[in-house]
Image 1 (cartoon, rainbow, N blue to C red):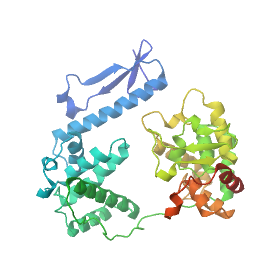
Image 2: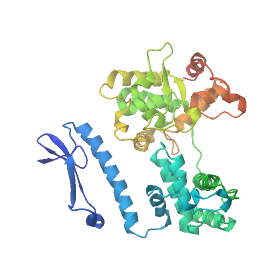
Image 3: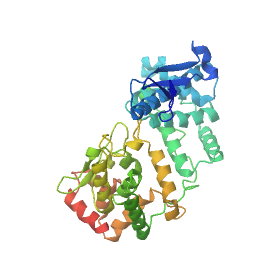
Image 4: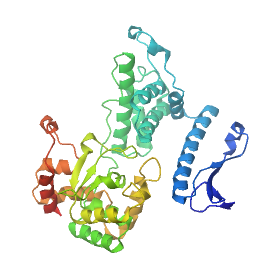
Length: 392
């Protein structure tokens, strides 16, 4: 038996990988052994890595659940318990005329049980975390008992925590959604006190800085020189304006290189959801993006993913991609320049060639204002390709 250095939480015995993890000391009383070990049923290091990471993640979730049953933790930790026990409040079975209500922790359970089906773990954590903050500050009250004073105290606490205005907007939006959804489900009308709370939406928000065209060209040149999967990802984003997570979660088959107009299909996958419904789109491949797609097609043979490095678990690891690529770009860009800057630059590049705004929105997957824009299928690929070519 030899300890394995490549696949995490594993060792090799007779060529087969085994998972191994020590039980945390505070949870030993739940187990008959201080160590968990079982066969991963593979001799492949890459397969073992994927299976070991999934097993470790499931264990972490289970241990978290055990701890919230063992300990009297702060209010926000009641939320996952309310959801995992599948506890349906008794009042939900009663007629709406009784005007029964639910506590906020129960409201989160209702919200996630009904709206959380098939949603990523980040959706669940956002609801748990945001409403947990409310419980910590204002208590776990009936949703009809919260007042404007509670909402203002909650705002003040978020400011003390140092949250930026954009983050506060997301938190308040989640809390409002949970309360409104639960109220509608049990048939009561309330005025949500967490609506119309004043705070500086722009506080702590840094402007995204587009990259100048000469900087983009220099980065693309470096990508061609280094010619590896990280640089293919940079080049693909640089001349498509895709979000980094959209590009990192692509399948090889999403790169349509043999069509009359080479393009990438941006669509939702179980391992990587899209930000909005309008993010589903086709983007012509031109310039460095076309080169990158061709390199992926020619070089990636043993995976269905275009970028296997960031798709080893159940979700695309876009945060890891962002950290690695922003670090590599740092010597070439200004202090505020990041991978996301390519997206802002693409909008400016399309403006520079006088591309119509609704075509810009379709290429980038941005929401176009107005009811009329929701009709029809949008511009054909050849029209998009004309403007992308001009920008590139």
